[in-house]
Image (cartoon, rainbow, N blue to C red; front, side, top):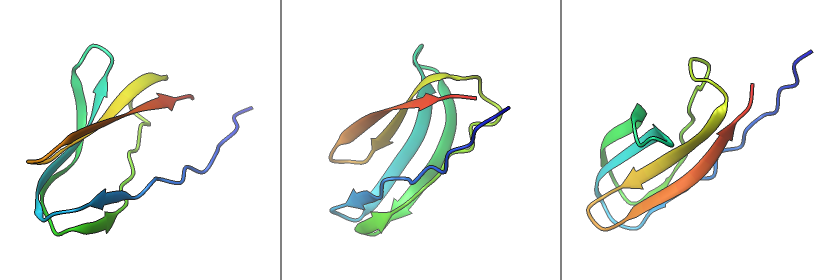
Length: 78
């Protein structure tokens, strides 16, 4: 039996306009998927990642723009 939990993504708050890169990495530092890469105006945005084709494990979600880099740990359980 599988149990599913609805994920509520935390909104990303951008303080300035600019190009962002939001990507998922494994713990070896390999990029698994780019969620978004492009220009965004300042404001709040929500994104989701479908990890159906990735094995269970720990992943890093990284947001880069011209001013900062933020990294969040994500645990994927199947």
